[in-house]
Length: 114
Length: 113
Image (cartoon, rainbow over all chains, first blue to last red; front, side, top):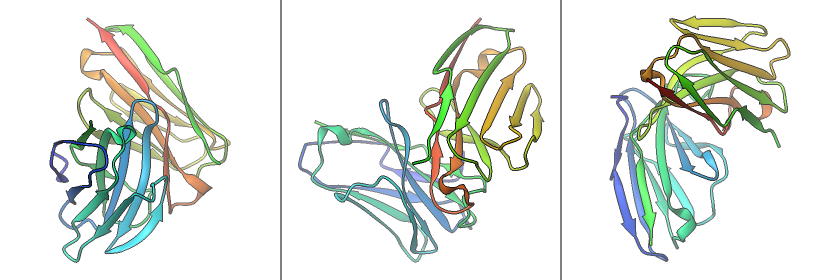
């Protein structure tokens, strides 16, 4: 158990819909990262938050947004969903804003868009 | 932009054989990390290499960082069935310790008993 909690574990939704994925980082970790893992694109960095502020942005679509709340949990919002958004979404956390530190991944949310 | 390439994409070995995966970056990396993802699981941090030419060992696993800090390798001696999974290398884009972590495509290791 990494200490990072992601909910829900599975999500099936229709095209055009909006979903919210939730992540609770390890106790004491201030950084939260979101990654998308698909068969053709591998593990892609989406966005990082550190202590409530956006710290780095990767290949995140405009239809996607995220935020980190004062209690440090984070949510990833995916809207106007397309079939191609079907993937495994991982949240990871680390103690610092630097990315040269060990990151702990959650179990992931498997999103299926039908 | 920076790319991190991993080879091979797949590797099948018999239990007891050795295994090596290679990671190559188009730019110099400030550090490189290795992760393992078991089938159906999530990535788990294995190690980070920072210094040019660095070699680190974890039991049967040996990690190397190239002299130019543009390539790295993971070698497993005498594989076991518990070694199955996908091994990823990852490096910070832009060569700094902040920002975006770029993952290689991973090497999927299958170990036949």
